[in-house]
Amino acid sequence: MRISRAEVFIPLSHDAWSKTGSSRKTRPEVALYFSGPPDSAYQARMWLRPLERIDRRAVVVLREREMLRLLGETSLPVVCVPSAADLMGFEALACVRVCLYPANVGKNIHMLRIRGMRSVFVGHGDSDKEASFNPFTKVYDEVWVAGQAGRDRYLRARVGVRDEDVHEVGRPQLSGVGTEGPGLPYRTVLYAPTWEGWTDDLFHTSIMTMGPAIVRALLAHSPAVRVIYKPHPLTGYRNPAAHRAHQQVRALLDRAELHRSMARHPSGGGRRPGAGAIRHLVVTGPEPALYDCFNQSDLLVTDISSVVADFVASGKPYAVTNVAGLPEQAFRERYPSTEGGYLLSADLRELPAVLRAMEEDGEDALAATRRKLRTYLLGPDHPDAMTRFNDAVNGACERALRAHG
Image (cartoon, rainbow, N blue to C red; front, side):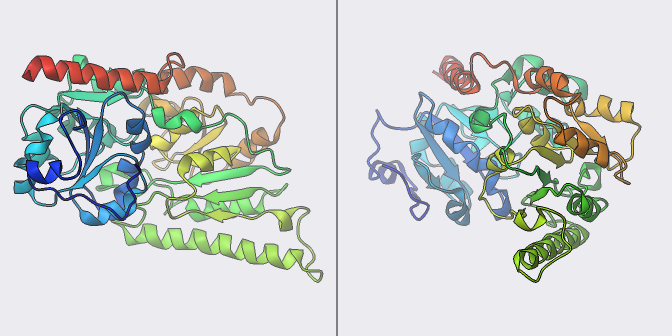
């Protein structure tokens, strides 16, 4: 039976859990624990499908009732326990052996205090951002990363995470990412900037300093290209300037859509050939999902974020903004995920050449580098990521049983 987004269990005792139809044979062994603001729902949502496919029984534990509406449909049982006291006294979770954490948030401490569970930080994407090697991560029993790059990141950072606690499990979410473009008579560019970050030290977004200029350049390019704009869900959450830049980008694409409509009218003239047939897209909600946008694009323009590593699965070309203006060698050494991509300076002088490379038939100059980088970032193709993730869950459950009985 599928649980709709309108249903929620709020059991406060072992008896209440039993009334939902649970028995010893059907009680969950794995929990996905999540707390956060509404715009962060994607961080939990990305783990639902992989957990639906594992061998072990799993449950989703939420702390905010509003999150249920945003989580989306899932066949997994969903429990919402807002009260910390109720959560820590919720006996039905005693059967859970492994708890997965997609985010480092303050309310994690309530679940971490429950004895008998093996805590695993899975995050919500591997990236070269400082958030991907947060010192707080050392509180978990294990840290799961996609590939060797994640392990090396923690080794370099020296934040207290022991190498033996890091496990490479792949990115099972990427199974639907294709390696071909959409096959349209024109090229499609996905612009997916990250957000401004919780602190200035985490500032990697291009939206304020480069975003409008990037979109203007794409709209002015000849031959005409389609633009998909999918900003980070938290864009503008901390800095109003990011929100204003986001609105500028939307206005540019709205005007382009108006001109497209005019070009299709018999009286419309003077437009570039084919421009009237191209419909740009602004994505600010959960649909189409990021990976669907990958499949609709020929080129990605983005910032330092997990979007880079995930897009590498496609093998298609990508460009990364150098917001800080670092020398190229220093930039690539600091952010290894950029090795297979093109860099964009603040003045966008490299963009015309990047677009020309996208338009050429056959592989571009960095295609072979991306194939090598894919293994480093995401792990080997065989066994596939879902198999590796499932094996990791089984292994963690076995370690929990040995440790806690």
